[in-house]
Length: 191
Image (cartoon, rainbow, N blue to C red; front, side, top):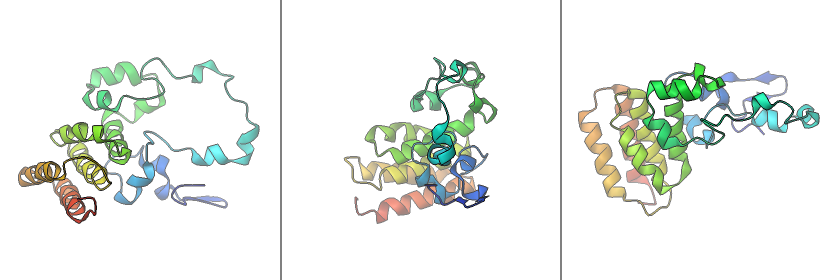
C-alpha cells in the first residue's frame, strides 16, 4: 500500500518514504512531489493498512484531538502568509513545530500544485515572489503541476509569469525549477 514502494518485507527505504520527504529540510526531490498528493506532514499509509493496527483502539486520548488552531484541516493560503510569530503561537504545541514554518509552507505549495484547483494558482503565483529560494522553487513546480492538468486556467498568463521570474532569478535551484515548469507547460497537451 506504500505509495512509493518504500516499505518492503522487513525493510523501509527512508529515502523513498513520503513522511521522510515532507519533513526533511530543503527541496523535495521532484520524483516524490506528485505522490505526496495532499499530505502536509507525514504519510502514515503504512500505519493505516497495518494488520496489527486494526485492533488498536482509537479516540481514547483527548490530548491527541486536533487543536482549535491550526485545526485538523489547514488553511494553506493562511499558512503561506503566516509570520514566524503566528506560526509559533499556532504550531508550538504540535508535532509539526520542530520542522518550522518554511518547511510547512514548502509542503503547502506542493499540496496546492497537486490540488487541481484553479484557486491554487494565485497563492502559488504570490509565492514566486518569496524571499526564500525554497518557496520560489516549489511554487514554480506547483504552477507547472497545476497547469499540466485540464483546467480553465490561463496558460499564457502562467507562462509569462514564470518566464518573467526566470529572467530575474539568480538561484540555480530555482532557475532549474522554473525552466522545468516552463517546459512542462509548453509540452502540456492541455495547453
